[in-house]
Image 1 (cartoon, rainbow, N blue to C red):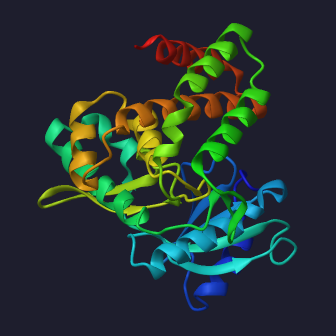
Image 2: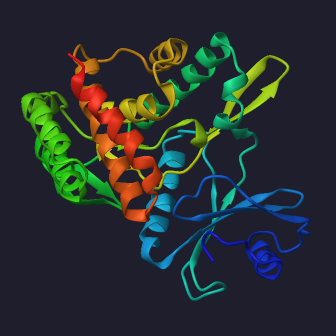
Image 3: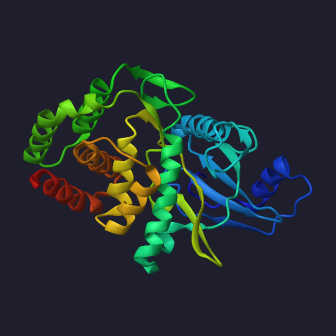
Length: 308
């Protein structure tokens, strides 16, 4: 069911879990949810239902943990966790009910914005990332309800991440060797990170909600923490840069204004982390069978390796 339509009868039963007297008016399939089904249940106070396929149900634990961690630290706006249910209960698959944050994904309206609007919204994104990165972690690694198999320092952690992605990369052998050489020459940059922090690790425009008001566009919230990790905060800056900024100066300027001062070597570290994100994206699309995207991603990796 994860990426299928949510039957109305099931939606009504889910809604009764959090709002027994509410009347369901409509079930909307929401954008996003590459691995999980995301549905909006329309009623007086709409809610979001996220359904997790069996092989990804550990992501439910992660999202609940991260959302509650952010709320505990006053970081947001992010959805409130209203109900958590494991597989085999109401549905065959696990699901979580979240509060609905008003607004639309920025990715749906960004193309029609001018530089000033981009700069203002990215300032809000930068402020959010800075607040997330104030939440320290005990080690570097993947997160569920804690850091899993934590690395004691950033160098072994990032070395491990690159090695894992390269092991899955079965594209051009010459390109693989180029990545290996590039990383080997810059491995010393990883040691610049003194301590791990909580990272959203997927903060592109599809996961930023915005709304237009009397004073223009404003950020209303942030969603989708399925990819959260404990890492160098610059890996988050690099993810936003790779997926959404794409060389648009107004966006980068706004992000940096909102985030605050960065270390002197931030551009070099972001460049290496962006290469990692590209390699990881290639591997993801290869695994799920979206092969049509692979040539463009590989071309981007080649261009990054060619930069001085």
